[in-house]
Figure: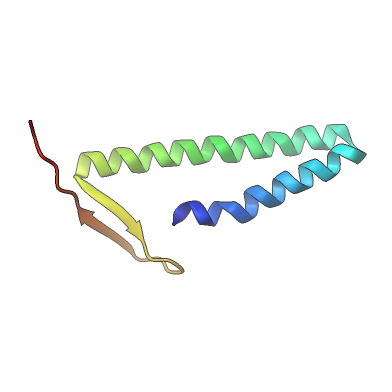
Length: 79
């Protein structure tokens, strides 16, 4: 669900980058850096969430359209 929240800004910035490429290459480069920055921030945040889930033995969920956070216990079989 959290991934859906990233689409508007990512798609909008990518569209602006494409349009600016036709008019101003320098601006397109700056905007492309912004797109890359969003990707890096998303990857870092995803890794942090995965680590917290693994350490806590839970699956973190956010209510769609809300701000409530839920932690569901995971069932793991230990070898």
